[in-house]
Length: 124
Length: 130
Image (tube, rainbow over all chains, first blue to last red; front, top):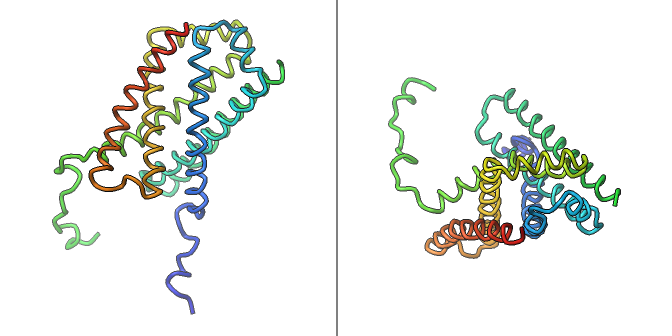
């Protein structure tokens, strides 16, 4: 005997909607102070020389929080783009391809940014 | 869809209503989010340029300091602030605050006004520092 509910459990578009929602909320909360920190850094570094920028980004606190800025932003944007794809792309194959591309893009941008932040942070 | 179903009249919706500000801001939130998805490449580029050495960093910042670069960065700043304020709006709404008809409209307008003011303030601060 299967109830109608048990038949559809786990058959959502991505099978992990609750976790998606939770992580979206958590990263959006984290992004508020992280974005303000990032804007502060960029504004205060605007027009500064290469040496000044590198010196700032090599400070431990700046390097760590910059890494968090990128990690939180990239999780957030990956989830957001996933929602956009699921909303507007209806063909299963195209949707799957775009979801994979979304993951690849997000991981690539994240890896690039983290490597750069670590290189700058560890060099100082 | 069968013949009968396809001939049923459709209820007119999006195209005939005057768009409420909450809807417009919601659409802007998605568009700015999609823009920031690609705009983050600017931040990644800046970080990678700083990690790549002085020659490449100066090349990247010369582009960002061009008029075209400033236009892109100004748009990026606005999108970031608009999305940030829209996100804060959502955090309050999801906790059940400010979701009444009139206050939700006011908050939606406030994100638009706030993002315009803050974007200009950030750029003025940037120029002042320089």
